[in-house]
Length: 116
Image 1: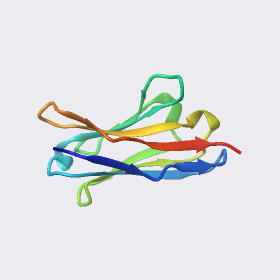
Image 2: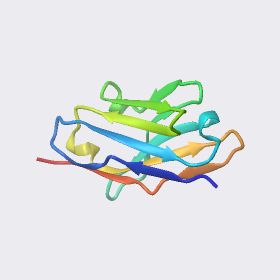
Image 3: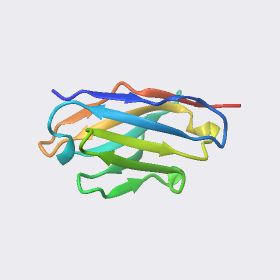
Image 4: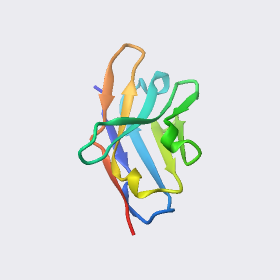
């Protein structure tokens, strides 16, 4: 069983930065695609960014140029560096693991609030 634990959320002013981390248990991290998603109050969960086992990245248009996803396979951890944060980035941010075996795992989320 894979467990994902997100951390790094909090309150930040507009224009500020945060770095989220997601630590995974188990032995399948390095072969898995990892993703960050977010869900704002009253809205559906949406894709933020993904990174494959080979390091290829994909971003939603609304974070391109501001957010960077990266991974450290030695630490079983995926990161999301968020810069130039806007109030509309306020949401619960979730980490997801997509294994090569077709299984999907979610973390419980970490809250990011962008407000002055």
